[in-house]
Amino acid sequence: MRLPWSSLLLLSAGIFVAVTSEFLPIGLLPQLRDELGITEAQVGLLITVFAATVVVATAPLTHLTRTVPRKRLLLSLLAVFAAANLVAALAPGYAVLLVARVIGGAAHGVFWAVVSPYAARLVTPDRIARAVAIATSGATVATVAGIPLGTLLGAAVGWRASFAVIAGLVVVIAALIIAVLPPVEHRATDADPAATARASAVRDATLAPVVVLCATVVLVTLGHATFYTYIAAWIIDVAQFAAGDVAAVLLLFGAAGAIGVAAAGVLGDRFPRALLPVLLVGVVLAVAGLAATAAEPLAVFVLLALWSAFLGGVPVIFQARLLQTASLALRDIAAAWLTVAFNIGIGGGALLGGIVIGAWSVAALPLVTVACLMAALALVAAVGALARRGASAQITTESAAS
Image (cartoon, rainbow, N blue to C red; front, side):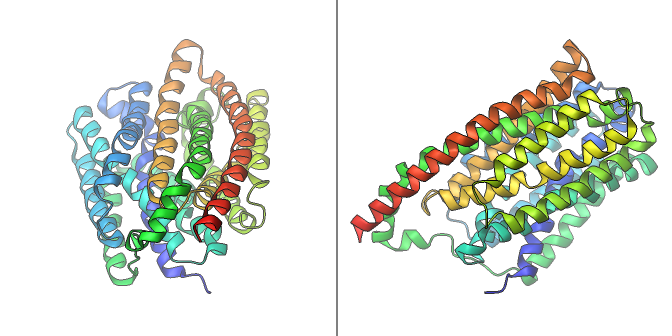
């Protein structure tokens, strides 16, 4: 079966605008700070509020929309997201900008929860990792191009233009989805009572590895966001680059991440268990190296690229592993939990990074990242053991049911 490239790329485009908008304040930090008269921590709060909304709203909204056809739901979410970015572009002050972030976060969480299962339903089981890699690669493209270009646009004509452009792109993507994306049946198991009974019987067997996987996601994302949210400040204050170099450094970071996503898409189906710890060890070594060699520009460039390359494949593997681990009955809600887990880490990292800067300095951020990732590595081993146990129990239960 050939991959449905046009459909997967449209899903990826939706992820691109969602992630670009979510992290745009990172690159626009100087402009937001100066025009609105706020602190760096308050800029970080724009990330935290967005992520906190995802955490609070995703699971209940996913449950409330569980009967809505997936294509119709995607289009509705994109409409809300376009409105949120338009409100951000027109915000007269910081308070309205925070409201816009809440609106965007609510749509963002459900959108992410829908996209990966949607992509999985477009392909055969042996292509899940590759399909998810393509559908979620928009997150990497956002890092490669969206955030740096948004940063350059904000520096040239103001931060409001960046949000306005995103709103326009969302409208274009929605129109293409109407024309191209095929609908999928997401309630197939509900139509078959026997399948529903079997799914109910195996739910407990897959629940434990899903929960531990989500906890691992929280730790990894928490560590990454603690540092990355304030990467512009670290580049300027610690690595001693000029403020005008921030966009170029973010472009390098994103380009390296694209390599990581591509590699994970190819290797994820072949090495679904072994690849994740290898990637996390690579991130740990790269970030630890940044803490030790911040005064060396060449080393900073190389280590930033390695950090992004290793990290780029991590979300793909998390998404694929979740879809391969969770039972069919648990898949959609598990995808919502995974989205929540990512955003607990993102929002918590932005908040934690602000606390670390206030208590110590920007230079301390990489050390906190390393500590979080070391804890995540310990959980990865637990996920593997629980997943194997859950898969064994699922096979036994399904054999008994048949």
